[in-house]
Amino acid sequence: MGFETVIESAGPVALVGGGAVPGAVSERILALCGPVVAADGGAETLLRRGRMPDAVIGDMDSLGVSWARRLPASALHPVAEQESTDFEKCLTRIEAPLVIGTGFLGPRADHMLAALSVLARFPDRPCLLASESDLAFLCPPELALERPVGERFSLFPMGPVTGRSQGLTWPIDGLDFAPDGRIGTSNRISGPLRIQMEAPGMVVILPVAALEDVAAVLAGSPARWSARAG
Image 1: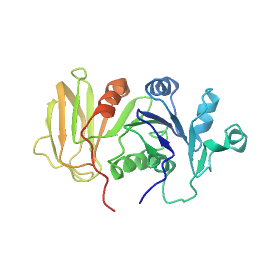
Image 2: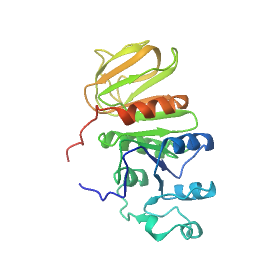
Image 3: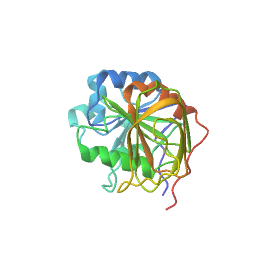
Image 4: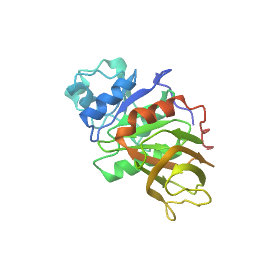
């Protein structure tokens, strides 16, 4: 299914949702990005902090009328269908090497799980999600990262997936991962990190301290997944 492109950028795009948006983290994200997109009610968060979004995408059921009036009509991109979340509506309408989002990993668990599902369903659209404490992103075919020894590094499969690793305290080589089987949470970095995945479907979770390092790697990585069929 094709989607209308609302925002196209040669660099990272910031995406702000209607969930918990920690101020310090959002400022770090905005510093890394050019265009800023709001997912429905995320526009209110941006406006309250003095930032005008370049586009607002969603079903517009969360954005109050008084806040919507502060936005130029050209910035509003309503998508009426109810088969997808506002996060999915946004991600599928942004063309960029990386989308960096906040306001999607909490406080509601159902919203967080829905966001992770979208990451797995659209592996061709690199996206890094940040909360006050954590980062989450779909592992690309190859991931090379330099982070402090001992730092927490978790892997959570959204489907059956295998891979290989260097630089983890507990290597993943030869292991079969699945959401209802083996998972890889609470691993630790033991040296220069190299991960290779055989297929899309593995979500990486790191401390939010790694935001800038991970964003640089994902935005510049030539190794990318293709779109899923269907």
